[in-house]
Image 1 (cartoon, rainbow, N blue to C red):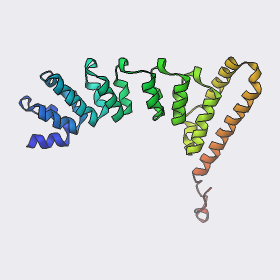
Image 2 (image 1 turned 120 degrees about the vertical axis):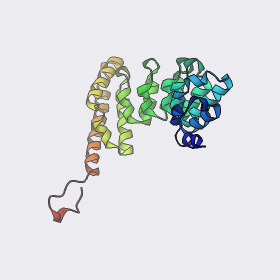
Image 3 (image 1 turned 60 degrees about the horizontal axis):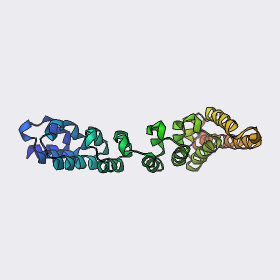
Image 4 (image 1 turned 90 degrees about the vertical axis):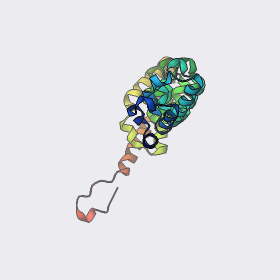
Length: 233
């Protein structure tokens, strides 16, 4: 009873209990409490049938998608991988390549833009990068230089403006990105787009300037004296 109570509260206690008590039922209890307890069951899993193993893997992943990392590559089925990603999108880091394609990342990046940071370079496409930035402007930091363009920068800035999260202006080097975008635009669209280039550049600069002003407004200036203590800008 003492062991059962301990496992139900913290599954990682499993590694401390005597070998003779490491039964299938105790493994279930441990994993329901702490999916990562799977890390301490390598030897014990070898004694189980394939059905029992898969059952334990599922329990662990349902509790914590990151538990997928403790499952041997050859035992990571498409079903287990999908379950892990559903529980924790970042679990895709531990999914074998055979279960991953562009569609896998498209679905995730559309919901969690910053996962673009963990997307293999060979799977990054202009469309995928655009989806990521539309979801989260900070994803712009993880877009390969060759996919940076003025439209993408404008999208990020409009998202920042819409969400009022102007602190992101200091986390993304828009000046450098703008230079890269201008170079890419000139190379791909030719010299005839100079006017359009100037217009889009102007829009970006206006958005950045506007965002900085709004950021300043969102943080009250310190009053110079007690009489002005209630005045905020």
